[in-house]
Length: 95
Image (cartoon, rainbow, N blue to C red; front, top):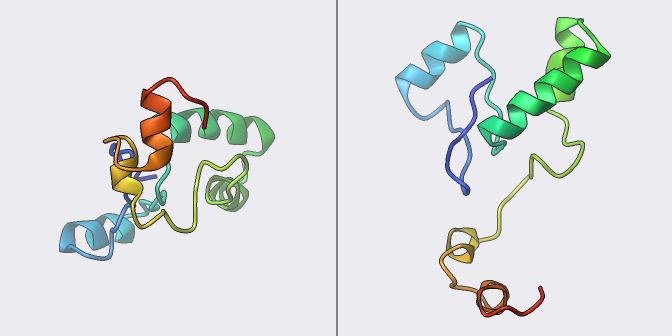
C-alpha cells in the first residue's frame, strides 16, 4: 500500500509514470491514509483475515474515518491557523 506523509492530500498514483509502474507491480494507493494509520490498520486487518482480496477490501474501507472521500477546500489551512476552528484551538478554545 502506498500512503502519504503529508497531513493533507491524496496518493495520486495515476499522475506520473512511476506511480502507474508501481500499480502494475501490485502497489495499492491508500487514499489519504497516513503511514502510521495504515500500519496499525494492516495489523488489525491481518488479525481478521489472511485472504488477499479481503485484506485489500478492508484496507480500502474507512472503518474509523481514516480515509475520507474528499478533503475540505481549505484543509491545507487548518494546521496553519487559517480557519476559525484552528484559531479557536490555538487560542485555547474548544472546537
